[in-house]
Length: 273
Image (tube, rainbow, N blue to C red; front, side, top):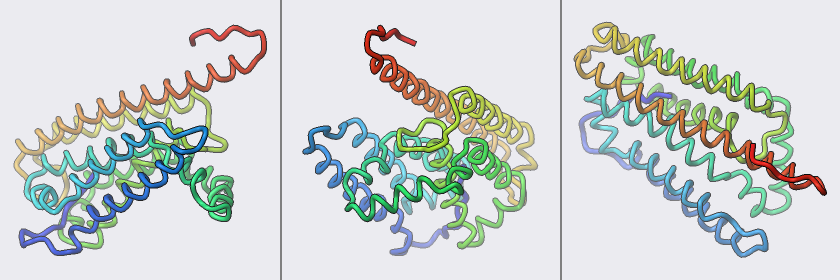
């Protein structure tokens, strides 16, 4: 859930703009598919479209060469990147239900392949909230409390790998907790809520640890303790807000499913949960 930057202070190259270009391409593809789905009898929610655009804008801003260069020299900017790429963008993209849109708009053969992937037992294990928690929060601890942070600031391959992991783990965790896309064998509300609480506690504990040990961590780099404490506070409060939003999404999805089940029973009165 964190980002470490290996950008130099030189002028950005064309490759540095690749994340922005990919974000624009993904947005255009989603908008085209959403427009087609919107013309069907069931339509497509504008709120989902807005969520996807928001997520892509967050990614484009966070991974832009300008912000990347600033994050290389300032851990506080780096932490804002961490929040955008690892938490807020995945939340917005997950709520946009991109897999559902793909299943509705892709050719039949592609839909069958996607459905086969969703039924794969390996995906069920990977998408379990506990697995997602380990990859997401576990990766965060590795980055800040081991030499991985220092490595990613000097090695471009490690730098890119950390970015990819941050985004993928953030998306996987959000989807496993409250994603509206299909998720066979997804555990019930109690398990997902428990995992979310544990994730929030672990995230806050790491922020407090960084704040208290600002002279020692992140490992392997020399950073002003004042800047590290500022970054730790950004992690603490920014992470709390993201997790509250995820909890709201979880309960909203649970309430909608419960309401649909109740109203589907003839003669039974739908009551608020």
